[in-house]
Amino acid sequence: MPPESNAHDENTKTHSPLLWCDDGWTAKIIKNEDDEGWAVAMTADGAREPALVGPWTMGRNKKDPKPLDAFAFSTLVKTATEFVGRQQQQQRAALHKNFTVDAASGRITVAHDIIPDEDNPSATLTAMNDLGESLAEIKVSPAFKLTRASAADWVASSFAKPKSASE
Image (tube, rainbow, N blue to C red):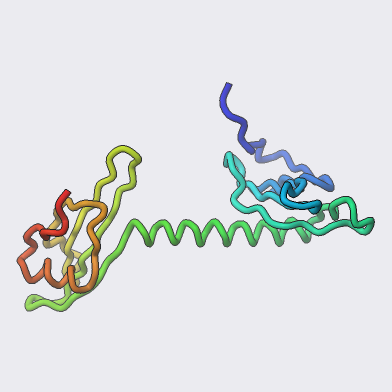
């Protein structure tokens, strides 16, 4: 039996005090294990793990959680969507770096692109001119550190494999 996920029929909407499913997200009020309070877990449809878990307000009786409502859910969706977007942006930035350097032939953009893989990650170093034409492409180690200086050195060496790029 496959692991349980948060997926539900896109047409199914649940609007209950402790569970709200709508707009591609599920908000679930859960007991906070660290203290006597409550937390809310925001999970995107189809995801196995929550994208965001945060504190949740106590109800008027100071014992039970405050019920979910449309306004709270909409705020939670916005927050979770922004959080996931920032995570994705950080991941893209970690996997793709580039610098533009001046050369005798004009401005050249050097990019280091990492292809993540648990068993065999790889990376490519590429150079392109201002017209977007490829000037060079070589395989390098994912651990290769692309800096403005290393990009300039690679261009100045006529795109010879950098010594620090060995795999």
